[in-house]
Structures are given as structure tokens and as C-alpha cells.
Amino acid sequence: MDGQDRSDEDLTRQLADGNEAASAELYHRYFARLYDFALRVTRDRDTAALVLQVAFLRAYQAVRAGEPAPFRLHLFAAAHYDAMERVRRQRGAVLEGDEAFVTLDPSRIAHPALAAELPDLARMAWQIYRDVKPDDYELIDLSVRQQFEPAEIAAMLRTRPESVETRLARLRAAFEEAFSSLVLLRRGRRACLDLDFLIGDADWSASVRRSIQRHLQSCQTCQATRRRFPSASELLAALAPAPAPAGWQETILERLQNAARTGVMATASSPGSSRMPIPPGSGICFSGKLPWHLLVLVSSVGRSRCNSCVAKKSSNRFTLGSVRWSCSCLLRPPSSDASSNTASAA
Image 1: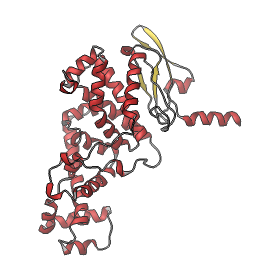
Image 2 (image 1 turned 180 degrees about the vertical axis):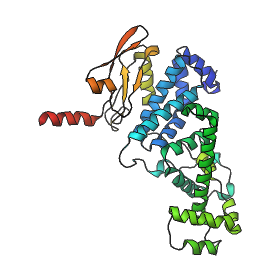
Image 3 (image 1 turned 45 degrees about the horizontal axis):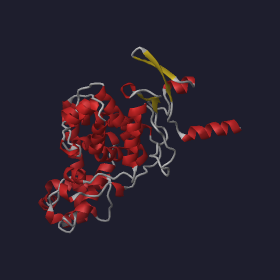
Image 4 (image 1 turned 30 degrees about the horizontal axis):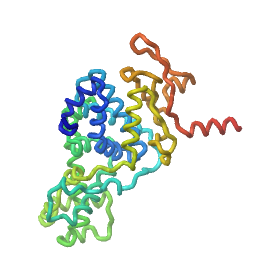
């Protein structure tokens, strides 16, 4: 049977039995959407690639450990925790521009009369979504783009489905209101002179958004204009996955397969290298030379090395079953080496 015809459940069972082809098929099935999810949340391609790598490792480990949840739930739950931790530690400006995020897939949206306007509408929708907090955007993405049910999202976030439903309803309403205001600012002024006078020379801002929203509640002309266009959620769902740089998909798969065989994760030093780059502050430690079913993944919170490596400057010893293993911190920021060299020179 062709891999594309097999369900996630069939492939997950084969993965649990150690089938490498099944793990590769699941990887190819979810790579594009998981990379897109991680990139839209973190807004940085190196960070997104690392989130993806860690998420697949954890999902594979969960399946092999016999945990019963569906594979994609394991995958996106792992991506959620890793991405949110990295976003909290991120500093500096966003590195990824809008061009990576606003390509519309015409097959995902049915508005033939608006074909010429859809690309600009997609940009407007992304303008609304990009400016919200990462955890709010993530929740909408999991619902709208990944099509998870509230109960599934609640399982990922370890909260109640009712809380997720309440947050989703609030966020959807806020996004739709903001998008409606932006659409009328860009598309409704010719049809409504009152709206044109209200806006004047003002540019898009929170106060302009509120003024347009109040006007919309009582203006039938603007309400008719708004009904011509798709919703913000429709446009978000129709955005094509942001592509990964050439070669990254194959390189990450090679790394994952190598980790499955040896328990060791290869690293690379820069985006220009022939290997997929690992950004600073990855915070991941791998136990060396472990068989796959004993592969241990340790994520430190708020540190670039595991707690023991930082505190004791020694390997982190832990017990797995009846065997003690050592965990060496393989991924540390290049800046830490530069600091050490500077200190030595001084």
C-alpha cells in the first residue's frame, strides 16, 4: 500500500514497531504544516526549524513509549511547548518579513469574483494576525489552520475545553472586528462619504479601528461593503504554508533518522553551512550513544544549557530504568564560546 493511502493510525503503529519508513512518511506528511505553524508563531526561520526538529523527536519518542494520543496531537503539543518557551526567551527584532506569510492558495478559498483582490486581502488579514501576542495567534492557528477541535487544543495546553472555547470566541470576534475595520479603511471609503469624512487623512491605528467599528454598527452601506469580502478566518485558512529554505526538509529528516539510530543529534554552526542551522540558545541536551528507545531529550527552561551543566559545569547524570546515563550539553550558543575567549584574553 502506498504511504499516502495509509492513515496516521497505521503509520503510528508501524512507527511504534521501529519502522523507519513509517517515521519518514509521517515526517513528510506533517513537515510543511508544522514548519509553517512554528514559523508563524516564532517569526524566525532558525527557531522554527529547531522547534520542528524537537517536536518530531518528542512525538516519535511518545509513540515508541506507547502513549495513546494521535500522532499529530503529540507533534503539535510538543511544538507548542517548545515554541512558547523560545518566544518567551526571544530578544530583538522579528527577523522574518511578511513575504513569507502572505501567499494565498486559491484552491483553499472560493471567491472567484474577488480573484484580483484576494492577494491584497490576504495581506490585510495577516497584518491583523501578525500584531497579536504569540500565544493568541497560536490558539487561532491551531483552530483555523490546523483544524484541531477545542478539546484537542485543551489537551495540548493542559486546560479545560470550555476555557479554550471562550478564548477562541473572544479572539475570533476581535480579529474579525479589526479586519472589518481595515477592509473598510482600504475598500469602503468610495462607497460611504460619511466613512471617508470620519477617517480623513488618518492612517491605520487602534483609534481609527475603533472609530470605524462604531461607524459600521449603524451604517448599512458599510455593512453591505463588508459582506462582499471573506472573513479573516477564511483568509487565514487559505494562506499557503510558508516554505522552508531549500534542502532543510531533507537535512532535518537525515538528522532525525541519525538520532533514531545512534541517539546523537548532529549540529551545525551557521545558516550558510551545508547542515541545517541550530540557532543560539537551543537549550537541548541529548544523551550520547543511546539506543532509540532510550533516547532522552531534556529542555532547559530559560537557559542555553541544561541546569546541571550550568550550575555544576559537569555532565548531567540521571537514572533511566536501572541504568545511569550522562547527558552532555551539545548545543550551546556560539556567543558563550566568544565570551569565554574574551574572558581568557583579559
